[in-house]
Image (cartoon, rainbow, N blue to C red):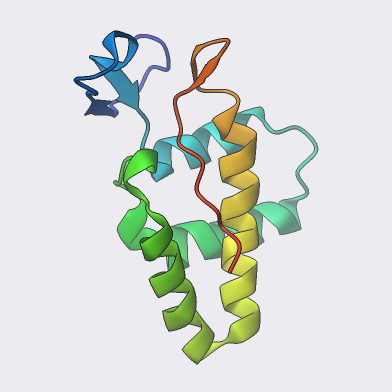
Amino acid sequence: MSAAFGWIAVSCKDPFNDNMKNVVVPTLSEVYEYYLSHKSGLKPSTIATYNRQILGKLAEWLDKSMNDIMQSNVTEKHLALTKLSPSQANATFRALNAVWNFSRLSFLINLNSLLLSQVSLRH
């Protein structure tokens, strides 16, 4: 259990950076839960849409560490969703982008180091 955030998260180790030896990186599910509980002013319709996109269309990523979601994953998933519905593919990654950007600055190792890596969610 992560004392800082109160949930189980995936450990991340960087042998070249002493500050990253035992850092805990949250999963998409944990980051999404954090987003919903800390982002003020979300309309019920926005939450319903994000639930459909994040919990539905990205369900297989929910237990993935945020830093394990790579640009190639984003590209492949967007292409697969586009075959079904281009507008739903775009909506899914707009939702993920909102969650990722809000959360990135919330999970800091220190004032100069982001815990969540920056991945381009543009397609």
